[in-house]
Image (cartoon, rainbow, N blue to C red; front, side, top):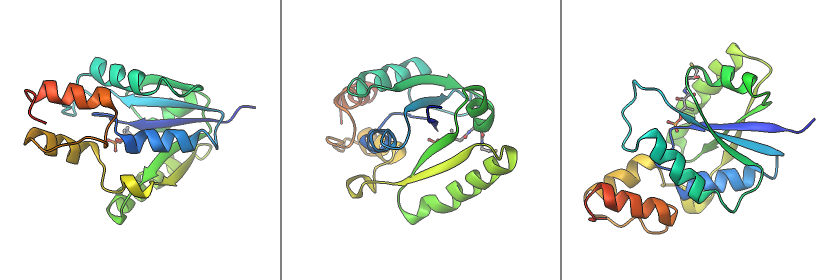
Length: 162
Ligand code: PNS
């Protein structure tokens, strides 16, 4: 049976850190479904369509990766897609508490789905969608932290300042 993982997240926007996790995740799983959370209660900088578009453009070099959207519980979506794993990246220690709590809750909700953490590549340890948005908003450069398509779209969002 092929090993399938979902890689859930907001991807607002996708970063090079995310791409690194997907690339390395593909060494463990036959297929990865990048699952974008659509939660209307959460405030995103990019619309769902924009987030999908940027992911698609950044993901061209990978085969065996699908992009999909979901709402509701991640474990329910994983079960619905017959995925055995939930892939998550871990950066600094600050990620740990939230990720630990979420992984334990997910396990409690569905013991058939295993959360698999990959330690971030050292280059991406301080890379997060939020910090990138903040830097770009105030004119800081984000070159090399995000795929070129994202760099362009962020510049457009913030009036070409980043
Ligand atoms: O990229 P993010 O924002 O850190 O991703 C968070 C995400 C989407 C993985 C998390 O918010 C999530 O799984 N949301 C769906 C609801 C859910 O299943 N929550 C965890 C158990 S209650």
